[in-house]
Length: 133
Image (cartoon, rainbow, N blue to C red; front, side, top):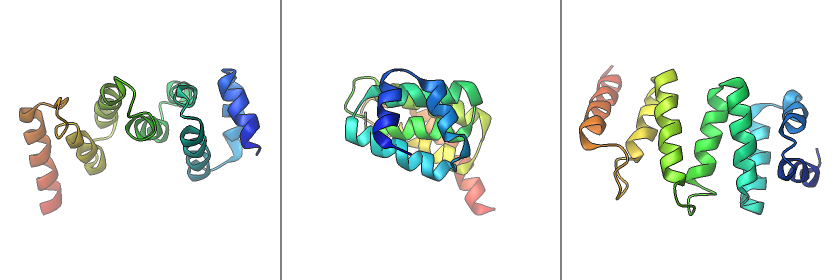
């Protein structure tokens, strides 16, 4: 798969074409390709494609990838943490896993405390209960 062709398609908002190209590739490889492109280009277009895929599949994989791009590659953009927080909260609604809870707790450690202390305490207590089991 030609990375430059994928970049061109993503930049041209040919998301369906890219999505179809990825249909026979496992998630780990897709993640690697898209993160590499995101770090190389620092283009918000990559996030646009991932949001397209998330919207069309409602898959935890695409949600996690969008959050990873927002917290890593695009963290310097104003509002990136807010969007990542929203997506993390939505992911927790779909899958109340320990990993999703721990990721949400990250947002309580930020100076702007996107996750309020009382909610963080509830989640931390739930994680502790999971750990004790």
